[in-house]
Image: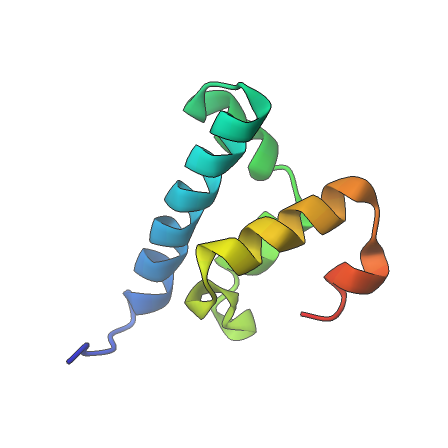
Length: 81
C-alpha cells in the first residue's frame, strides 16, 4: 500500500518524466540529456510539475501522447487532459 506524502506528486512526476524522456530519446535518436532539455521546454512538462493538475499520476504513455500532441500543434487533443 502506497502512503501519500507531500513528496508523492514530485516523486511520481520524476518517475514518469524519466520514462518519457527515455522513450523520447530512443525514438528521436537523442541523448537522454537532450531529450530532457527539449521536454522541459514544453507546456506538458509545466503541467506535469504542477501537483494541482494531478497529471503526475497518469501513465508515462499518456504523458508521452500529450507531448507528441503538443509537438504536432494538436492543441485540441492536448487540451482534453
